[in-house]
Image (tube, rainbow, N blue to C red; front, side, top):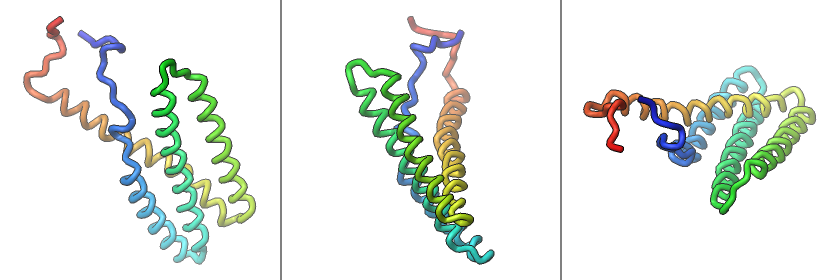
Length: 149
């Protein structure tokens, strides 16, 4: 027996979204990228890479803030969230592209940092959820087929 979508437990992004952990990961990635870039004689690329990671983290924090503000309203609208997301992504994209263009070729590190941050964000938010789902599935005494309704 499957659980209807409206009765499924809700996993809030705030449960798995940990900005401090992401900040530490970004700092470590920036250090690694800067060290690798320094070995190749392009320290600025590593620093721009870190700037891209920082822009990605800023975007993630702003997403969380907007989602909390919009869902706290009596009648939250998807349109507000979509408009907020589109405008925020436009601004961050323009900033990233402007830096990449103005400081080329090392400024391209910003775009690589933004891209890698998205992968890190997906991994750090989905892995805890998958782990929790697996532990719930293997817990003894949990039987999906019985319900006390």
